[in-house]
Image 1 (spheres, helix red, strand yellow):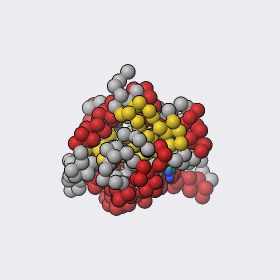
Image 2 (cartoon, protein in one colour; image 1 turned 90 degrees about the vertical axis):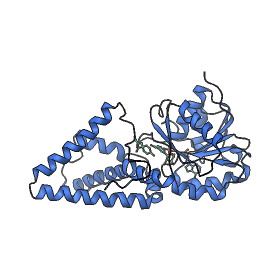
Image 3 (tube, helix red, strand yellow; image 1 turned 180 degrees about the vertical axis):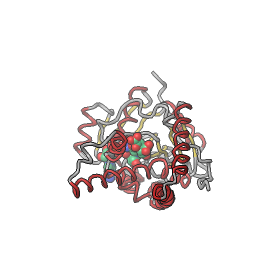
Image 4 (cartoon, protein in one colour; image 1 turned 180 degrees about the horizontal axis):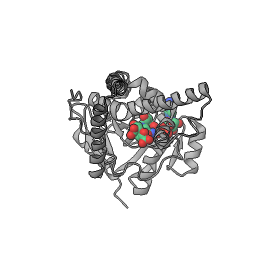
Length: 308
Ligand SMILES: NC(=O)c1ccc[n+]([C@@H]2O[C@H](COP(=O)([O-])OP(=O)(O)OC[C@H]3O[C@@H](n4cnc5c(N)ncnc54)[C@H](O)[C@@H]3O)[C@@H](O)[C@H]2O)c1
Ligand SMILES: O=C(O)C(=O)C[C@]1(C(=O)O)C=C[C@@H](O)C=C1
């Protein structure tokens, strides 16, 4: 058993991430009382059946009353509406955080609604799966994974330290960065890879329809890896694309340029170029595995994303 960290924690949203946090809080007894709220009655009933909290409500406003920590775990496009709903009911001194995959947009949506009497410290655990909903969560999801906090300038140090400890207790390694940098890094390591996966699986599916070939049936393991990512939640990823638009478009432009380079090398039979690139990328994978950090984020430098 670990020490209680908050008297009352309120979770708004109880899908993969919210329910994983709930399971960790319960297992490690991090809260005196855990209040669970979500938008749909069916999901709330399921959360109750799974025993994820101590109290359950369909009202986010009701859930946050008296809470010392509020964790918003909803699709990023819904963050503004949640902030507007809870704002007037937050306890002075409460820490309000989120887990959204984009940070600039979440802050722009939430901050204007939140009163100065609370500490708003946005966050993002870099851990997940292609599954969603309260059944998908599990203890251990955050273990050995990064959680990035993007506290605003002048944020209360004690509040940041408390949130840091919360994530560390769930097994995460915590880093802090500014939201713009977060959004660029995540665009290349998470958002663009998902977009590529959605695209390649879509293309294969279209080809099958056109040629009646057996693209899907005979897909080898490389393609299967893409289908896992492409099975991720459509609402979540629609929102990520719409809410990290600039960084994603910037990274996609670079990706397209590099793809054109590869295309030319193939067209002109330039085996050396292909071999060099494939050797470089293989070394990256191997160095990640060797470091025992196949879950870790690549180091792009804290504030200089553009490598060339
Ligand atoms: N899935 C991942 O791999 C992953 C990883 C890290 C962060 N995230 C982020 O975590 C957040 C939640 O993702 P998830 O995977 O848990 O999604 P999920 O679909 O499993 O759960 C979303 C939850 O939000 C609730 N919800 C949806 N719209 C709402 C609204 N308007 N008001 C209140 N509640 C609402 C749903 O009922 C559900 O309880 C997202 O912002 C996502 O970007 C996801
Ligand atoms: O492993 C996966 O399935 C994930 O998609 C997790 C993943 C990622 O890209 O690493 C997805 C989105 C997040 O915001 C954080 C983590």
